[in-house]
Image 1 (cartoon, helix red, strand yellow):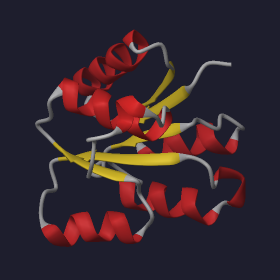
Image 2 (cartoon, one colour):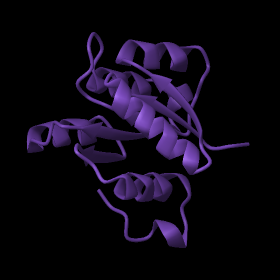
Image 3 (tube, helix red, strand yellow):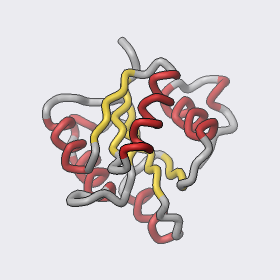
Image 4 (cartoon, one colour):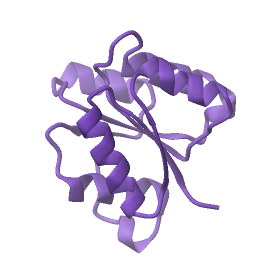
Length: 132
């Protein structure tokens, strides 16, 4: 069974780039264009191994999505990586306090995103050295 990734990103170009990047790594990828769509997919039974989550999205932001995921016992194994332009310590702390596994700032290096996703999804020798 393929490792699955849900990308929640309202900027279409970034979302499509992340989908392409994760597909190239062999992951099964779904794309949600806002937080509400991500929650709808999760509630419909689409439980990914990892959620790449933007914070600033219309309607339902990434913090609300992370809070909902962490509050749902059926989603307790989902890894969450916030990918955001919100680089203040208070934002990072808020995400980590919500239980996200990693926090990556935009603009990001695709190599860094891949390494950090792999570190969360494929533990082993290749995962060493990747950190928050």
